[in-house]
Amino acid sequence: MSFFATHRSARWAVPATAVALIAGGTVAMSRTASADAGLPTRTAAQLLADVRGAAGTSLSGTVVQTANLGLPEIPGLSGQGSGGPASTSGGASLTSVVSGTHTWRVWSGGPTQSRVALVSGSGESDVIRNGADVWVWSSAEKSAVHHTLKDRTGTPSPAPTDLPTSPEAAAAKALAAIDPSTAVTTAGTAVVAGRPAYELVLDPRTDATRVAQVRIAVDAEKHVPLRVQVYSTKEANPAVEVGFTSVDFAAPDARQFAFTPPAGTTVTEGSGKAAPTAPDAPPAAEPKVVGQGWTSVVVATLPAQYATAATQKQVQTLLGSIPKVSGDWGSGRVVDGTLVSAVITDDGRVAVGAVDPAALYAALKAS
Image (cartoon, rainbow, N blue to C red; front, side, top):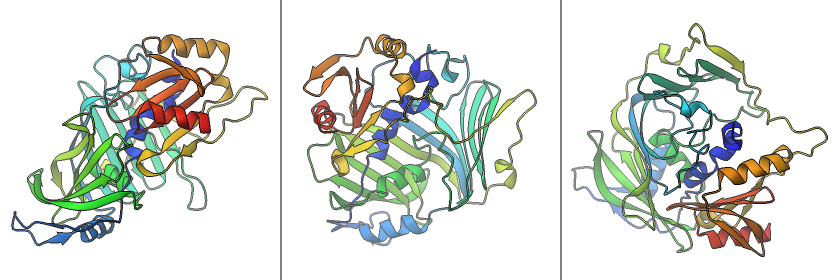
């Protein structure tokens, strides 16, 4: 089994950062949404307030998620050929959504009740939260992992995935890092899932990022994000798009959040702790963020147990088709996508950002 199959955080590093690096802004909110669909005029500042005020709205619906990050086919990164969950024939896996188009069913009963289900063929994978209980279930693997969230003074269990599976989650990531590096404006109206919506537009104030623009369609009545599109400087079509194709704002039935593992399911209790380290091995250093806003680069060091000669050989074999690079920062392999780039170094570091590889090299040298 490959390194990426057993260490999920590495497998999600590229797609998660593609969305997590989306930053918002409070400057240049100068235009208003046009009333070309008969809607009242709303400024960008008003739309931002609307979205924040609608957090936790009850709803259910179908979401289509598309990721076109220009990433190469790497066995083990997508789950294929690794013996991981995604390699199960006919099944749906949470580790297989880093590219292509996927359809989700989503339910939200408020801040502490949510469910997302990825359905493909005869398989289904769900992430279900009901209060302090979080379940991650795979029908194809006949497995379920149960996490218990800590109280407010503690640290919650880690999220099962970091790639947003709903427009609300994607918009939250986009708006969470508001700073003056972004111009926030509006661009008229749109119709999403049959509902009129305003379009909120986030434009980076720098040419040093690969993010060209983020567009958030906000429901005109409920103020809930209905669609998020992230555009790359390298492609005309969105690199990432998450949007409803149908949505219902009635409160979902409580049974949608009451999960009981089916007979024959292997249940594991998730501790929320990091993977065990080798005896006497120091813990991995916390990731560093080099730079700010849209040009931020995350630099992380792999845990000591993944820096052994055997594992390094496995990683290099896995990435054998990826271009090898070197410089005064070191040497390694580079993944050069449309929205993000990533470098995995020979000495066990990873750098990821929505920037050109040259910015990653500089961050590696500086960290």
